[in-house]
Length: 194
View 1 (cartoon, one colour):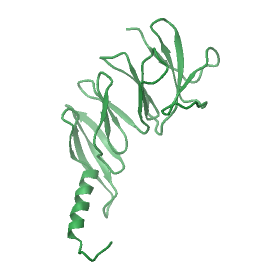
View 2 (spheres, one colour):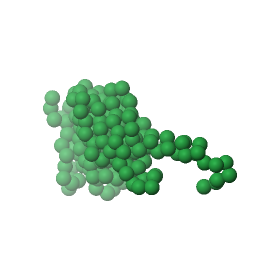
View 3 (cartoon, helix red, strand yellow):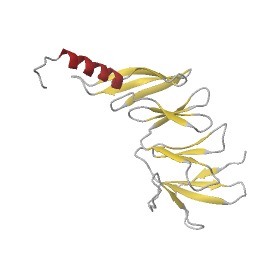
View 4 (spheres, helix red, strand yellow):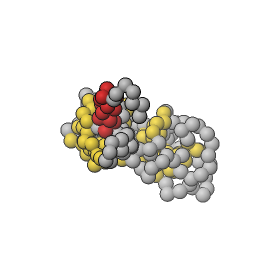
C-alpha cells in the first residue's frame, strides 16, 4: 500500500493553507503536530493537530483499516486520510504506547489504559491508579506495572495486571484504596466524624 502520510517538522511556508484539527473543532493558529496526508487521487493536504498535555507524538497504522491514529502530545485523532475531519478524538494525556503480540495498541495515561484494536476501534480499562502508572510492560496479552497510591500514610506503588483480552484487572491502587476506605468506614465509631 502506498504511504498515506508524512510527519513534517513544521508548518509548510508555501502551498495550500493547513487545516487546523482540534478536539472541539475550534480554529487555532499555533503550530501543533503537523502531518501531510496523501489521498488516493494523488492530491494532498496538511493537518495541524492541536496538542495534548504530554510529549507522545506518533502515527499508528493498522492492519485492518486504512485509517490512521494520530497521537499529538497525548491527544488521539482517528483520521481517514481522504477526509480532513477526524472520525473521533479521545484522550489528551497519553504518555506511552505499546503493542501486543496480536497487534493491539495499549495507550497509557496516569490513571488507566486504552486499548486500540487492529481495526481502529478502542475501549478504556477501568481506573487503575489514583495518579500515576510506571514500569508498564506487556507479555502474552497481560499488561503489568505499578500504580501510585498517595492515600495512605506512606506514598507507595502498588502492582497491577490487566488482561487486554478478558478485560480483567487484578490489583491497582485505585481498587485497593476503595477497599481500604470501605473497610475503614466500617471500623469507625459512630460518633467519630473525621
